[in-house]
Length: 324
Ligand SMILES: [Zn+2]
Image (cartoon, rainbow, N blue to C red; front, top):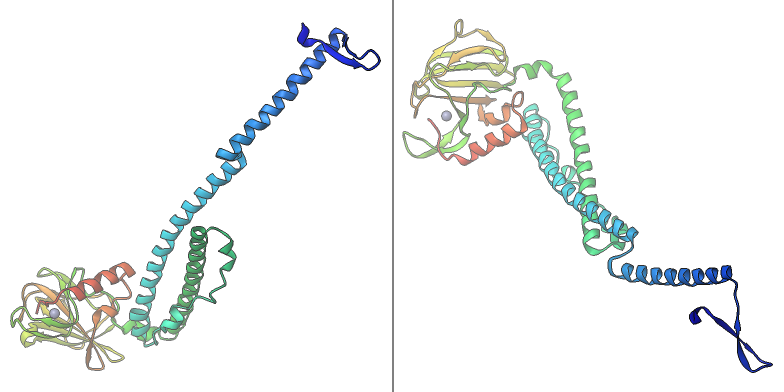
């Protein structure tokens, strides 16, 4: 009871005099003290908690930050993958479409535009070093990718224009695979399997069992269909515009195929075989432009995807031997 008593100092009497509250006042007084004490302890607790683990808002921001950073890392992988794909398309554009059509390849300076001034991404400098580097990397690579895609779009527009103006020529240019078969060997210096020394391999070799169907790769006229030394049975098609295709080691010509027969792209013209000097059944396929053999790999653009083209190129470059 004594703890609930309050006293005031009476100066006249020079002593403390007990104050008598009524019941209501006493309850109110007690409640106020508990309330103030509670609030003080709550504040101290929250302050201690915040300094150790952060406020709820800080915790939410930190979680958001982690999610954003990990998403940026994923984006980085996607950008690298896209860069790889754009590079593949550019390579096919230059080596197949543009070179075959007689257009100059797009220069490297145009294809790989430089990244602007060193400070254009300085706005990210205010973040931590890791975040700033990641943001700068992402922004600059995306800008670069956008420029490359724009260059590619321009190139395709030019090709489209060229195609519209040269449809007749394009129907005659060899542009598809002559046979449905895996590539075995590429164009260039190769070791001959029978002579066993390196010499120029003027065509490419496709795997093809005896009797596999062979197709004209562009419109043209049969120029030769007969036996020809090491080539075995040989079919030569004149496509005009300086182009000629040669199918070697074939087992038989298709019905109606003789000198002077007109053929169109995709038409059955012969059956593959093992005649002449070979290391087994296959199709040896050559393309001549103005009398000179050229790499037939660059003339498959009408039915080869960028992935297939890159795969063919890898096979052609990795095999040091030819089939004939
Ligand atoms: Zn060959």
